[in-house]
Image 1 (cartoon, rainbow, N blue to C red):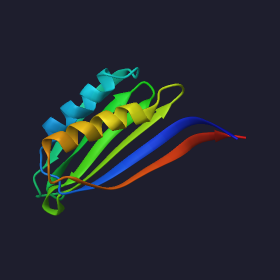
Image 2 (spheres, helix red, strand yellow):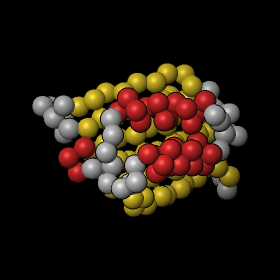
Image 3 (cartoon, helix red, strand yellow):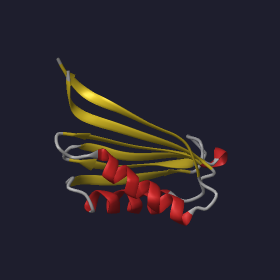
Image 4 (tube, rainbow, N blue to C red):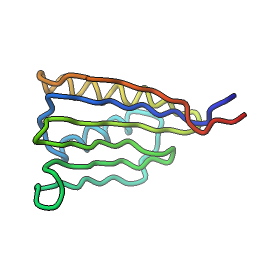
Length: 120
């Protein structure tokens, strides 16, 4: 079997930061890769309708890079899904490096990787 895509997720504890800052980290990682950004957006949640936190996404020609935060729980989930020849590991490693550099309390709880678009 062969895969046409790859998906990597990171789950963090001890996160503190805002959505605009995280979006800039995601966008920078994409711009330093061979992926092509199509659109980016962040939505900050004030806790009135959704839990306090944010959701950020960078749509790329090859799929997406996203982050979702539950601020009260200090947790952050990041994922990168790419198709074709683009390696999501290079993008996700840049994101992890920048987050860890700027947030000393950040703890990577788990990293998971999957092949996607499996072809028999």
